[in-house]
Image 1 (tube, rainbow, N blue to C red):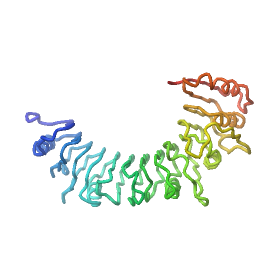
Image 2 (image 1 turned 180 degrees about the vertical axis):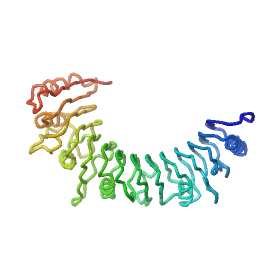
Image 3 (image 1 turned 90 degrees about the vertical axis):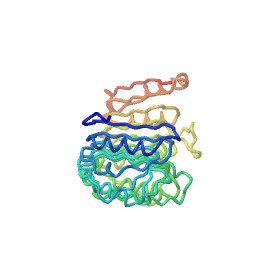
Image 4 (image 1 turned 30 degrees about the vertical axis):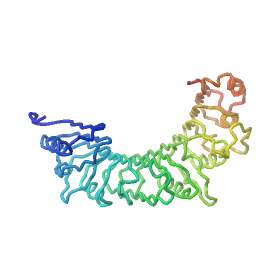
Amino acid sequence: MSKARSIFKFTLRVIFDWEFDERDARTWISTAVGRNVQELCLDFGLGPEVNLPGCLFSCKTLVSLELDNEISIDVPATVDLPCLRILQLKRVHYANDDTLRRLFSSCPVLEDLTIIRTSYDNIIVLDINVPSLKRITVARFSCFDDITCKDKLLITAPMLERIDVKVRRLWDFLAEDASNLAEATIEAFAEWSNEHQLFNLLKKMANVRFLSFGKFTTWPVRPYEAEFPVFQNLVRLEITFACRYFYTLLDLLECSDNLKTLVFCGSFQDQYSECGCDQELVGSAPKCVSMSLETLIFSRVRYICEFHFLRYVLNNAKFLKQMKIIGMSFQFTELNRHIRSLLDCPRASMPCDISFSFES
């Protein structure tokens, strides 16, 4: 590396080495910066914590920076990263809340941000103020047993197009001007103490075209007064099926008049659900089911109640073009009877193509 005049990409990974010398790492990083590195990836595994050299934060050629594991960031007074577009901070320790604020304020063209947090990263208020930001992923899975977790997530990114939130618990969330947001993924454990946070979060995402829920986010105990926002632009919804919450699902669909694709990513059954229930859906169908739905995909179909829902859609979806059902191969014999019954049920859309497949 010492002979190279310029370096496009430099990767340094230390899997497990207690004899690793931090001074060597700082020297290599400084050398890469001096060679006008454009992509830098640092991963120090389970080794001792490494403090980054100050010159890294004034690298004018850096386009992509990934920091992972046992890295400590204390941003110097002078920070200048004029070309940085991609920033990934995974399991990093910060000096204080202001560390990230100063870092973000010095990245005028940052577009893609990933932050994977830990319970010991020393951040209480995660304040992301990046006018150029287009994509963001925020994950935190280490607060599972801490019911008093009071973290705050503040986002000011008027150009934001996609957000991916993966957390054990929803915290206070505030997004300024999310009108440009087109795609959102939420994965969080629903807790009795924070259902309101989920619905507050959804209100910030009301303009999205694509919305995906993780398995444990899908069916919180909804507060009585809470309502889904109107998703006027939503065309694709990915969600986990749960028979106990049939009518919560219908409430969500009632707010999604222009939905075209509905994807069920398996079934979720909690301690209150009856896996083999025989609950039928009654009443008029949501507008999106009867007037706009074109594709329904159901992965890992297992229970009778799920076939009731599929029949409900076939009976009411006038513009449905495709229904794709994926079952588990070990249940082939058990599901075969329900599949035959589904094929014989009345359809609102005769051209609809129904396909079945099985996976192991």
